[in-house]
Image (tube, rainbow, N blue to C red; front, top):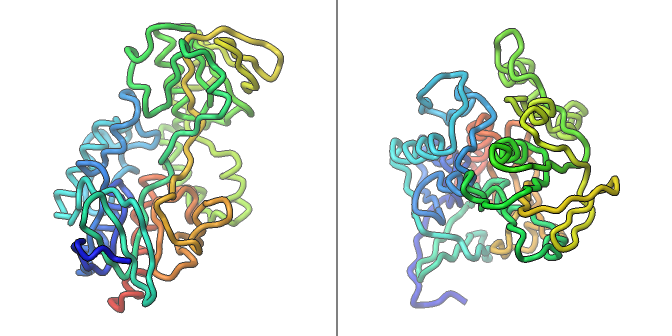
Length: 360
């Protein structure tokens, strides 16, 4: 039952999240003159980037990291830093005067008879909308396995969101779990001060950073590989391999820095890590770089989720009429989860939301 003391903001479209996906959706909504609001839990646009480690850079070049309508200043072939890209997103929101409610985390999202959605925020204000675009992305909660609880309390445990810089850890050796982009970045940085062990399952395939002087991402874009449909054979192969470019992060580069490669971690006991090949090592810190999981406990619409609590969608379209997503990994193709792809995905989703609102 609706709290009679609550004030209700009525709008056509509610966008949840003011990262790159939510801002791209806001851009297209603004151009179509529809009434909308963006709800952002933090105090500025792009704030989620600032939760990551200080030395992070995007692994796609600057020319491929622009949202529609606003260029990203700097060397086109260079890689934007964490702080630079967060500032770009904040500037983007201001440039287009996007209607963002900052400090407004959605704690509950419901759908009522008649098809309208009702979102509950932190205070007495509610938001009622005909359509909802969830743009919270695919990097919500870092994955930390249950076995982490078996480590001694003296062992420092961090994730890419709680690791900050070289001063984050005073003792070693340091064990980094996960050899994706973040794991390799952090392993390389920590090797400046400590013995570092990098543990992973199957070895990653890293692509050359440049071919004939041109970024590998440009080649992947012009050949159509990045936009191969997720359900196609090529798309499935791309998803399985999940390649990224070698920016001085290959096994050879890491070995030259003194990083020790280890196979998959299977057990821990006290401060000892035990690996799948039977080897073990004492560690002073563990950094879990195992990816992220979704957190949709606030989405109180049963038909929107499967039995495991994961959201259901087809190319960003929920089976619940009026509920959409932007920025999901592999929403349509490889670039859906990258800055390069959110502009196009947002345009398509906004077009669908406008049709539902009778504004197409």
